[in-house]
Length: 259
Image 1 (tube, rainbow, N blue to C red):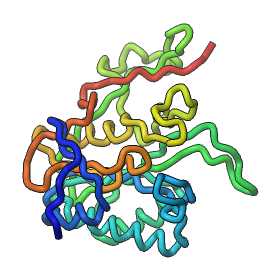
Image 2: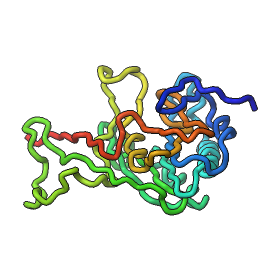
Image 3: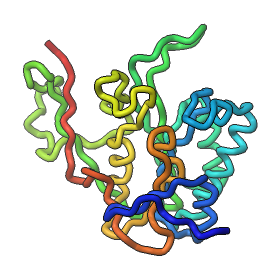
């Protein structure tokens, strides 16, 4: 196969505009410490190459998903991690397959997605999922903390914590497996491209913050594929891969309205 050339090179890593399987073919076994995937959800959306690309039969979509998952598992090093951002209706199929491939389940992270609507005789859908698996025990685990949530109007704490507010860690609250601050920007004035539901950089940044070590090697085979293409670290260079603005010490204020 022709040697892949990155379309963008920065001190943060390399960006490749190619089919993810071309990239996987260039990666050695167990050469990556962290994989973050944001695949198409098979909703029939037009991402610029025709809606048919995102409108597969159910079994065909799962077959394709299992193929890139198998390649992800192959390139992940012992102690490395796999994160998959996906709809719940696909998540349980993918989670079962990932576990069958010998990966260790860590978390099903629920990301609130308010603003959707009831569909037929179903409950109100209000979350997306991030599947979090590791190859064996995690080699790196950084405890990520968030600021205490405050009201965006009065700036006071949303909760009183049962009178134990003074005992909270000054660095903030421990990150849980339920994220309330990750809803996509839906209004046109907040979007760079009005017709694209772009993935918030906060989401992969938070995942890599939890996993980052000084020399971690990361790849995103289909991260931001609906917005910005494909990105990956070099298959040969052990360079640092910090996501923009993401460190284990970074704390993004969470504000809600209480008054």
